[in-house]
Length: 183
Image (cartoon, rainbow, N blue to C red):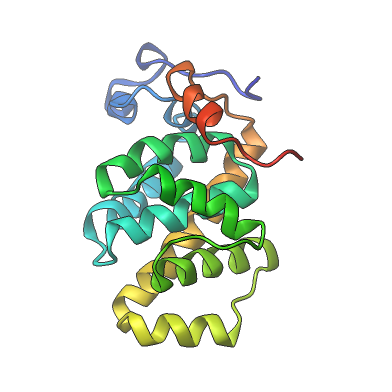
């Protein structure tokens, strides 16, 4: 159960009702602070629409952050979103395998992106080896965009955890198909 009430458009001043253009629980809670919501959405839009990082790699990084953080909300939403960016069911299963120290059929760059997301989420530090592998494959702009994406979603999953945002019913089936690790 969320720690704050979910807001509806009718709860907001007219100039802030656009914050709920997508009626999802995350936005319904962020609307308690319209300026914060707008600021977060600005960076989210850049990550989604302005970054030159390959969208599939972006979604894999986001899913990895959500997976190791145990964020059912971010994980379920980005499983759905990732379908638009050629992330397959096998790719999603590979996140669990790679997180458990196993192997997968992912290409080397995708594996390294997952490793970077795990390192920065769990240990809050990126190894020199992981950085060197990423540096070989990504130019400085894409590399920076990858780290901005990982950092943003690390903050967002912590915000979601603090507010205890509920997963909407239409997203729960993703958690059944691709369960998070038990905590």
